[in-house]
Amino acid sequence: MAENVSMIGYTRVSKADGRQVHDLQRDALIAAGVDPKRIYQDSISGARDSRPGLDACLAVLAPGDTLVIWKLDRLGRSLRHLVNTVGELTARGIGLKVLTGEGSMIDTTTASGRLMFGIFAALAEFERELIIERTRAGIAAAKARGKHCGRPSEMTPRKIRLLQKAMSKREKFVVDFAADIGISKATAYRYVGPNGELRADAKRVLEMKGEGQGKSS
Image (cartoon, rainbow, N blue to C red):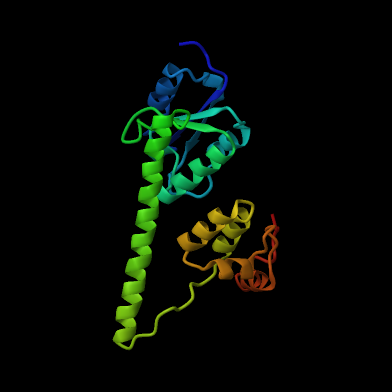
């Protein structure tokens, strides 16, 4: 297959000790037309927030490019994270193509592929609504039994640093991210400003944990 310079690949394996290798994923991406020199990779758990290879890959993607992955689970930490990531790519004019697995019908450069991803996005929203509904039902039941609910989630230095990074994203990402770590949008902005600057509450937490004020970017 002829090389397509607009296709950029990403692979990920969960272990960095050699028990898992990238060869299978790389071979599939190359067979699909991705230039081997344009394949980025991580050897790290998908649950980790920091993935240098993926960050570098997303940074070089330009409008008109297509991100090619082996399976959906190579890209997203969760269904919601996956939907948000692809939504951001779509907003930048970048396509996504999945080669195998449950998401192999997804190719957002085609009408049918966009339709299939729309179904995934709807499922993510459905999942979110179910969680909210169950949470509210649980709180109502607890209140009926006389239990106190709504104890605020403890803010940690790690959550504060993650919020700093999240603030550079669009508003919907910040809202979803805040929900993921168990805080409200209002709480997020109480600790970190819209440009990633640390506010007084965040500085107090960092000082109490012995981390100082740190960087605000």
